Image 1 (cartoon, rainbow, N blue to C red):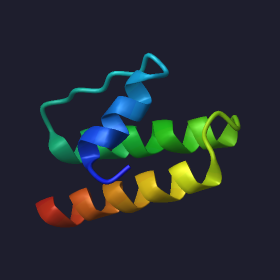
Image 2 (image 1 turned 120 degrees about the horizontal axis):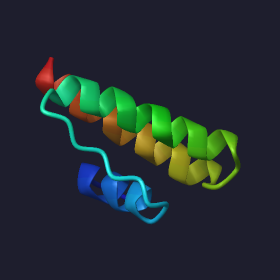
Image 3 (image 1 turned 30 degrees about the horizontal axis):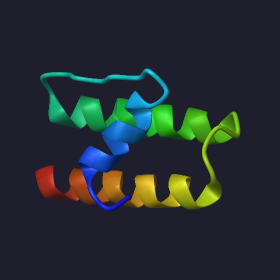
Length: 63
């Protein structure tokens, strides 16, 4: 997993599709869903850490 698109594809594999007009809200919701998948042990620690890092990078791009 290297890009935000990859994070979206990971969510899509669990039938989670997120699209919001406000990019900041979208990133917050994506982060919430990734944390929930990790909490439920549906994704590995490595997947979780990579996804969170990518989301934080995206948040920094819009700030």
